[in-house]
Length: 259
Image 1 (cartoon, rainbow, N blue to C red):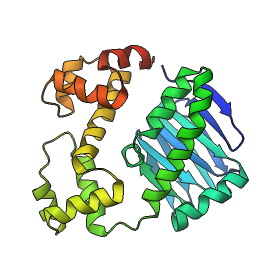
Image 2: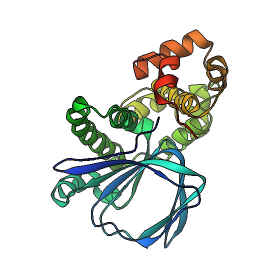
Image 3: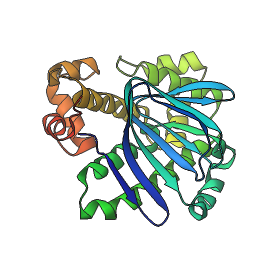
Image 4: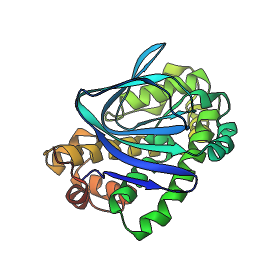
């Protein structure tokens, strides 16, 4: 089940919470810089420039004092917030550079550290209190590295193509041709920017999408494996265990979201 928990540390506070369907937070500012991670549902972030939807598997990094409101859809949303103490955020901000104003990333970009944080929040034992600070610092450090890199337009286009079609068969040569670079340049640029191969990124996207289905649906494991591009259930189980340290059956039993 999704944890409902708040844990305070010297440099930050981590809170896992559920926002009720249709709830609205009027325009406000946060006194502390924060990270918002969305695990289920959609958060609509209302700013002077309009509303943007932040969906499952996305995170947003924001400085203190940013004026915005929020509203939530019919299904509500399950979130984790990380509020940073001023001295800590002052150390983190230079790592993000101009992206500190509002860095929007996905879980795979930060090596699925949000999922690990969620799992430790659910564990709620003495060990989790030791593990969580390290995971949060890794998240902010890796996020800064990804956010601060300038990423060429062709790389951004390639990532968008991959992220929107990761359940299908993706040919690197086709993506490279569409964005106007050679396959070797695409592969090298992707690894240099994100710290993993395109294949690793696609597998991570598929596993995390499947993990959400395991938590939120009653579909069979075989059907979920087929839906997210795995050759068969055995292949899915091996890949899933490599990323989550447990089988899909074990994951569903321990992480199922009750509605």
